[in-house]
Amino acid sequence: MKTPLGLYYRDKCIRTISSVWNKQSTKDYVIDSCKRSSGNIKPIIVIDVNTKKANCYIIKSDLSGFEEYHDLILCRQIEAIADYSITKYNIQKSQASSDDKEKFVKLAVKKYYNHKELETKDEKAFNKFIKEL
Image 1 (tube, helix red, strand yellow):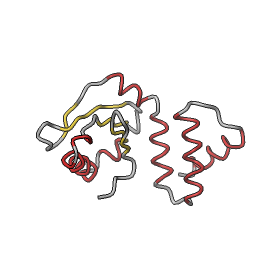
Image 2 (image 1 turned 45 degrees about the vertical axis):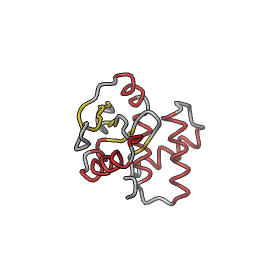
Image 3 (image 1 turned 90 degrees about the vertical axis):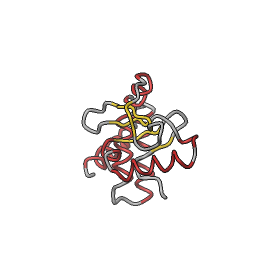
C-alpha cells in the first residue's frame, strides 16, 4: 500500500495535516503500518490547516484506533513548520510539472522549514505559484 500524500514518517513522529488525517483511508494506512512493524508506532502530529495548531495522537494499545497523546514540545516543534507542511502538500497535489513541484518545495523548505529569506525573484515566483494553487 502506498503512503498517502501528505503523511510524513520522521524519526520522532508521523506528521500530517488535518485534511489528510480526516480521511479514513489515512487512519487505516497508519493502523496497518503499525501492525506490520512496531517501529512504526510513533506519535501522530496533526496540523490544523486553518489554525496551524498541532494535536498529538497515538495508536491505541490494541492497534484499533487512536487516542489523544500529550507532548507539548513535539507539538510546538511541528507548529513551527506548519506553513511548510501545508504548503508542501498543496504543491505536491497541484497539477504543476515535476520540475516545478521540486523547485517550489525546495523554496518552501528554505522559507518555512529553515525560516530563511528567499531572494526577491524567488520570493515573487513562489508567491505567484502559491496564489495560483
